[in-house]
Amino acid sequence: MLREREREWIAEATGAVPLSATPLAGGTHAETFLVLPQDLVLRRIPPEDGAAAREQRILSLLAEVAGPFPRLIAVYPDGDETGSPCVLVSRLPGKADALPNNPSLAARELASALARVHATDLPAESGLRDLTDRVRARRPEILPASSGGPVFSHGDFWSGNAL
Image 1 (cartoon, helix red, strand yellow):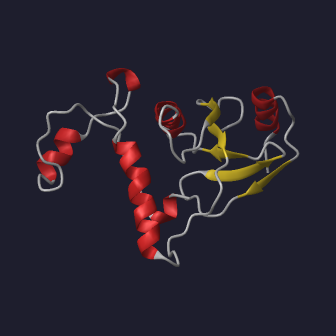
Image 2 (cartoon, one colour):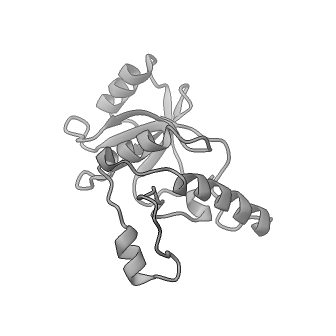
C-alpha cells in the first residue's frame, strides 16, 4: 500500500497518479511494489539505511551502460515526508530465479550482464568506494594486479537478485 506522500511523489515524477501498488515478493532489504499504470517499481528503503542515495549513484552510473539494468526514474533519498527513503525505477521483464531450469544458460546470461557491469569505469566523482585494494589483499588469486583504473562491481550478484 502506498503512503499518500509516496503517491503524490510518484505523480510528480511521472505525470500520472498511481492507481495501484502491488507488493513484489523476494525483496529482503526493502519493501518493493509494482506501481500501475506506470509499470514502475518502487523500493521503500529502511529509514536508517543510506541505500536510496547509493542506488541513485549506481543507477546513474549504469544509465551509460547498455544492458538489462533498471533506469532511475526518481529518488526520494531522505524520506522525511514519507517516513522512508524511496527509489522509483523502470520495471524489467522477467523474474528472479534462484533455481533456473537451464543453469548453464542462466550462468552465461548472468556472466554477460556482470561483464558489462565490470567494464564500466568508476569515475572518482561517483561517490562509490573503490574496493580493489581490499579485494586484492584478501583474495589475490581472483583479482590480479592491473594497470587499469577502478571499475564498477556489483556487491550482491546472484541469480535470485537478477532478472
